[in-house]
Length: 401
Length: 96
Ligand SMILES: Cc1cc2nc3c(=O)[nH]c(=O)nc-3n(C[C@H](O)[C@H](O)[C@H](O)COP(=O)(O)OP(=O)(O)OC[C@H]3O[C@@H](n4cnc5c(N)ncnc54)[C@H](O)[C@@H]3O)c2cc1C
Ligand SMILES: [Zn+2]
Image: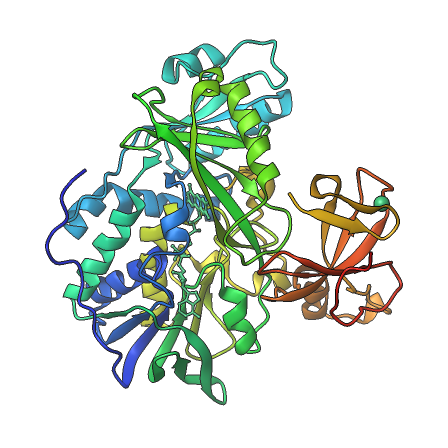
């Protein structure tokens, strides 16, 4: 692992007022701050974080990055993000251990195969690298996958996106934080926004556990806690918060050269830089804010993992944890303006928003700076639930990480 | 794994149940009168409280009946369960 620089970010006390207040110091809030400074020259900005920087979902996710989504709208924003990932280390001047080791999305039924091939073709039309690979090629790309045909969900092939990968999530957050802080943006921890100060259709300040702070614009990037804040604004958003769990094994020799995901048996696996197997499954069915989930979800996920990767039967589970993700009815994010003149919303990334970190920071900063959507976030408005222009990735991309 | 109290069968393991989201969401009485905004709210918008939440559960691997529960979304603890048609009770312990 690379050494950290001596200096990461300043730790200032909040000032009385800022042009822009970003609520939530996760990856999205920090990336937004960075691009506000870098692309728009806006630096009178505070990022307010109730806990410690990037200690929410940013610290808990399984770091899978890909852009092989079906719909054009999703392909647009995730591919924009992937291109940014490809230059991010240089932009931030910070190691983020971005490793483009490719992702296999397995198909287990004839319908899976058809849907997968359709998605590959759609990806290609959008200029996204994607291939359909047969079981013997799956075996070449990841030799430990069980491709025998006598298992309950045999592997009938997979889609493969070679440019997909993983990155070191903490370093990504710290890299953004370091650059934003150096640009003059205040990153303020232990500072929970508990209410909003309103004048008509504007929010003129936020009430925090460290006092009131006036602001010109407010941007919400508070994944998992979005509804708690929007309830304070009297703004209804179509979000349900669910626990999502992940886990790691002990350190192992390199055995798993790619990322493998399976929607049907619901497990996905990659091997972290140090050697842990990192795994996750789907969300717990019920709403929750407890940052933990049910044990039977892990049991099922382990059963699926051992069937697909028999060699894992000998691995020890080291730790499990949960995050809280905000899920929308069409499994797509909500990014953009709100009925308030100067309040901007970024939420609903559900189980898959880590990969969007640079992309959403870029487009959300644009939206905040210009008071209008960026081309890539324009389809993800709050009013799509009224107009019916949903971007329904549930069926299309299933396991949404 | 937690035990969930089915109002008909008594306490059973969580894996026997299916989650049905917010309770007491009434179908519009005069659907034709709703505008797009109202339809959107009926279809897609649900409460998402941090704390007590009245929600629907089905004992899908048991008696297969639906019932309601008031559960805390922070601790995940069930405070009370009640049968469909019954009003949402005040918070209190699960009857045993
Ligand atoms: C187990 C798990 C696995 C995942 N795997 C993947 C994956 O492989 N790939 C992928 O792309 N995505 C994945 N995700 C999803 C991804 O982590 C999220 O979509 C993404 O992190 C959300 O954006 P964020 O980074 O800003 O959120 P967060 O890091 O959660 O940031 C929100 C911040 O807001 C703060 N906050 C909340 N309320 C307030 C308040 N009132 N005042 C001040 N601060 C507040 C929180 O403390 C938090 O730090 C996963 C998530 C989980 C939980
Ligand atoms: Zn029952």
